[in-house]
Length: 428
Ligand code: GLU
Image 1 (cartoon, rainbow, N blue to C red):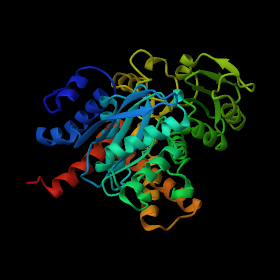
Image 2 (image 1 turned 120 degrees about the vertical axis):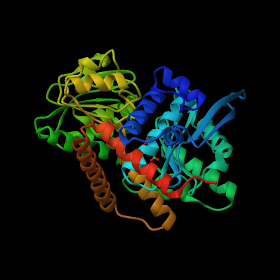
Image 3 (image 1 turned 90 degrees about the vertical axis):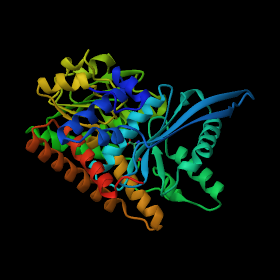
Image 4 (image 1 turned 60 degrees about the vertical axis):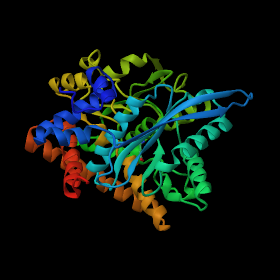
């Protein structure tokens, strides 16, 4: 692909591998399918705004450490920027850029009125106390304060952050401006203006799509088998909802190991074990299992729900599942996509499969801004309707244009963002 359309750092990444190279390659393919000119490609390829901040932290022992954080706002053509905040040792600017671009496409595909953003701090939260994490979160929020707000950019949880992180962000922002602003973040606790159904929304949405994709392949939930990689907020919830739908979840893994049980795991008991021990490892109701074999298990459905790049050229040929539903953002590299397509595996892309989180984030933002709250049943019904409408749309575009589901989803999203941009026009 030509790299002249990219910012210098992005061009460098596009030469190599990694999430940003994958995101840029997906955009390039969509731009080619849509026949857009280089100028428009350039505009869509580059983030609108990036902020990198130093975060000085006084540790509990009195020493001072300086962490690095980023907030990347990829696009505002359809509305304020929206996207999660990640705490992980793997966070770097290129990863945040890729995740921000995927948020733009995700919001456009699901037709929620936002652009895309992402934040990240390079930190392993397991090595910090609750008090230290609160200080990091508040200082980061204070540093990025000029560029966030309910009409500008609305953060939410991602890997390594949770409802409490959002409560601290909301409080820090509110104290700074002098009044309470619940709409500045989503994924907040319900007690401070969060939405019912938000915490389970991503995994619930993954399962709505997984069941639709299995049905598309003629597979009923009863008798279907699944493996789930990752047992965090997305993976554990997906395993639970799959089991409730009658799917046998035979294996799950986390960063410490994996467990397997022919006939299906008792996911509720496994969640209790994880709550008590911090890992799936050692769960009495299953056999230990080598985590690296999970992606190649003989199952109908594979749900990668951990991090980017786990399905790559080196292991994609081992996948025997009929359907891969991407709970994580960017779990499949471009090379893996080609291998999976050649082997007839149906891959449902992240920007569709895991969009349940940002859909209910949108519902939460609407409720927060109006100070009027919806019932759980109302949230669930609207989530399901939006997920299934997007699934039907992507299937139709794929059939019409002869594209993979990822290409169809990206083309649909890129076209909506480009239309908004072209209608607004270039200023000045
Ligand atoms: N972090 C989630 C994602 O990647 C949710 C983002 C949001 O709700 O803004 O989609």
